Length: 163
Image 1 (cartoon, rainbow, N blue to C red):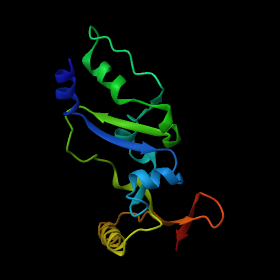
Image 2 (image 1 turned 45 degrees about the vertical axis):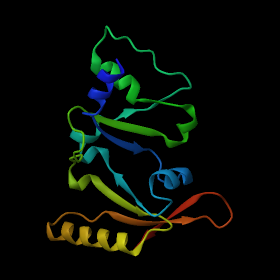
Image 3 (image 1 turned 60 degrees about the horizontal axis):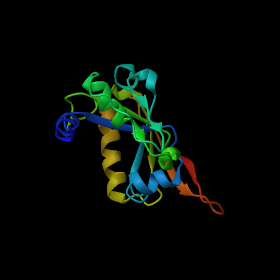
């Protein structure tokens, strides 16, 4: 059974999204210790991609599987369950069958913001600048830019808009 599930999960494309860009642990775990970036999307501008996102079920219990039911339902139970310890992520996932190792296609206008981590490298900023120039050349809107800043007296992240 494990082999069958592994075979099927290897084919699933998975994109993870969060409701919040300010969680300090998210920046530590998923943005290379605050050296990465966060992309902000407006769902309504790319519904064909984003409206299929499913909310993570946080529980301290493993999902109960019924192998007599549809395999894709059982895979979803596994791929949409995480320990309650991860609840701070406020995560949603896009699961796309037979899309492993591919890129999520979305309307470029859906990208409405880019947030640079507190410790982002200049090289990353330059790559984003190049990407924004390409967008301008294609007559696409430029997303809002923000710097994530460590709060002066609290363990939290503030966002400062770049003008």
